[in-house]
Image (tube, rainbow, N blue to C red):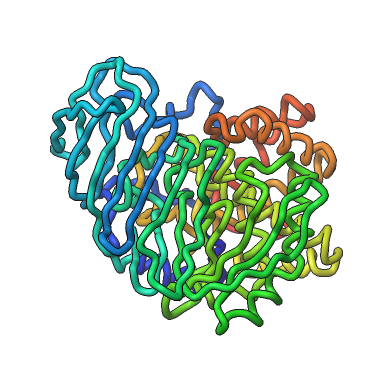
Amino acid sequence: MASLRGSRFVFVALIVASCGGDDASTADSPLPATATPSVPGKSDVATPASTSASRGIVSTDLVLDLTTRTGRATLTLETGSLPPTFEVGDLRIDAVSTSSGTVVGHSRSAEGHLVVDVTSRTTKLIIEYGFSKHGHFDGWDATPGFTFLWPDHCGNLFPCHSAPADGTTFSLEVLGVPEGQTAVYPREVPAAAPAYQLGIAVGPYLYEPLGTTPSGTEVGVYFTSATRAAALTGASRLPEYFAFLEQTLGDYLYGKTVASVAVDWGPGDFGGLEHHPFWHIDDGQIGDPYTHAHEAAHGWFGGAVRMACWEDFVLSEGTSTYLAARAIEAVDGPTAGAALWQVFGTELLEMIETGDDTVAWLPDTCNAISIAEHPLWSLAVYYRGAFFLRAVEAEVGRAALDATLAELYRRHGGASAAGVPDLLDLIEDSTGFDPSDLATLWLLSTGAPPGL
């Protein structure tokens, strides 16, 4: 999720936690510093559970009118034998029909999900609906104008499956944009992505192209007149960061134009959100190069490589933190990279000393937690995951770890979800090094590992 920094994290965590979400158990408390758990094998890890009880969403084609707050979702489904179900939050469902125009019945389940009465032969549905204005980081916020769908609020904007393993492509058309405003959004998300990845920002935006990578990706930044100077400073090396990611991991899957977008999330500095290909960064951090690099890295991990479970959060955030540090070192030099690792280490030690530490991985359950309300949503997870990969790098060499991450991306990017066990197994299979002890030290334990 967001590239939250230092004590600022506490503020945003409280805000988002107050927004609701399910009441999933938070019994998975951090392990004591003296614990020495074993790393589970893949067969011991909980099986990913889809939000859908019947069939997945292959593509989501949306038309949204911001003036009337109405939408039309055309959903292409996998074949299945049970009626499809969708998360619809507080949407007002007006009509449901098949692609042939046949009106079909629908109802709401006890959990509030939309259940559509169609046969297994139906693979395309058209849902017409109304959506509400939100102001608590849980849907469409019309003032000043942005979406915030992470982690499970997509149903407040369109019918969806919010489990991180569920991937869908998107097309999007936004109507009813106020005069004098610009809506920044992708008209297409051509590779499967988690539902929370779709993003819209509306405002008096200006755009500056910053450069084109050797792979042909145009990299730019959107800003307002008030954020222009900070945005151009923070994003000045973004094309080089993005080129590093493409060259290290493989071709980007979400189009040939990408950009950071300055958004006004209100008081406090919140970081960013991985709405690829146009990721959002709060006005207060739009001048921070690390935040640009971190959100860009989510185009590979957390986006294209979806998390199998929320308990695998570190695979998204720890990997993106590590890759952002690597990008900054490659582009801005070893001194800049070392300074960033010093910040990571200092902030993690402060969290350990103040009792804000947590384990970085929960291997025994899958989607049994509400991530926005659970201790796992913590900067400790970002830093522990990054230091774990740095420790693996020290054992196997930078080139070998790069090749392993690239292979994980090649196998899963835009195609399927992955969990921490997939990463651990691939490290051992591709390098011959067993990372279990390092995983125990950095991911499954709390406290300060030696040398931190």
